[in-house]
Length: 87
Image (cartoon, rainbow, N blue to C red; front, top):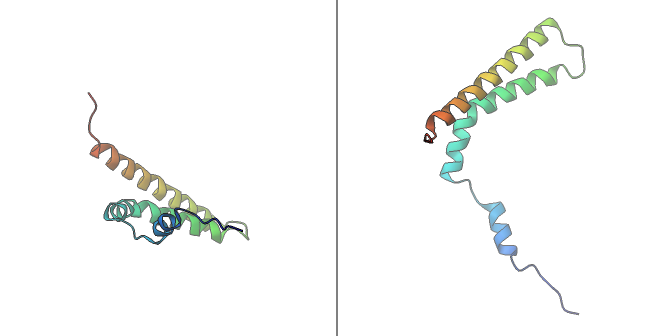
């Protein structure tokens, strides 16, 4: 019996083991305020999973949502400001 192996196993294995490029790290750094705001929102929501949210919890979630929206807006505006204008 003849065994058949994957022809491109080396290519797929190398893709998994590679380090992020400098441009990928720069993109992560650019998005870090949004990532942090989303984590804060997630933390606030997790706290209220097994109980009824108190007024303080509701306020914390509302503030975290606002921070996410502000971070998204700033990231979007930064992207729009950096893009070339189309005539």
